[in-house]
Length: 235
Image: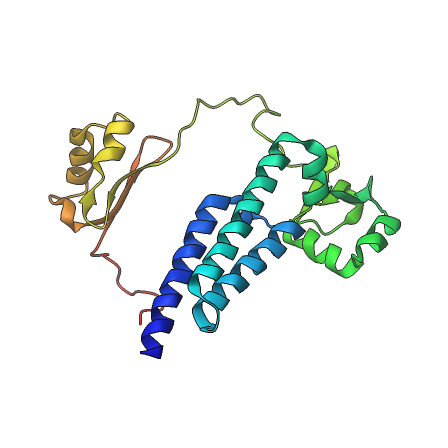
């Protein structure tokens, strides 16, 4: 009976975490600030107590969880409306490189080492600090880098090439099933999909693992049966 109770409490805890994450939005899990990090740990701790601490009544933990999520939602709403509140909870970015020079004072305030700075620069394919115009440590800990004009990659705009408007790829078939909703929403005719399959010698949708209409208008098709002489790392 005790195991059954723990099982039910664990399912309830998972459900509460799922609901809480949906209510708080994607920002909490995408790039966490210090406030988001603390909030996430606290929510996890409350849910863990619900799952394993049988001395605490489920309704008490659920109430605490609901109150905590509600407070976080109010703070999030207030942060959207008030810049000062958003700045206090999320913080400001900190400049650590300006015109190729390290700002040691700012780095010391954050206890941000040169080794870690070089590590983050290398992740962005920057190996020479002199090439950096500005580098900022964002509130979520990531590094944003703007290179000096002489070291920035050449873009299509720089050489006067302006491509036509692009669109997102459209998934047509997944796991042998036609995604009819995507076809309707993107004005893709069924005949176009069938023609793309027939051009590749495929007569049945069920034989297709994945098919997507790319930005260029070409249809990529992958079947369950791959005509490869040798599969790499086959298990």
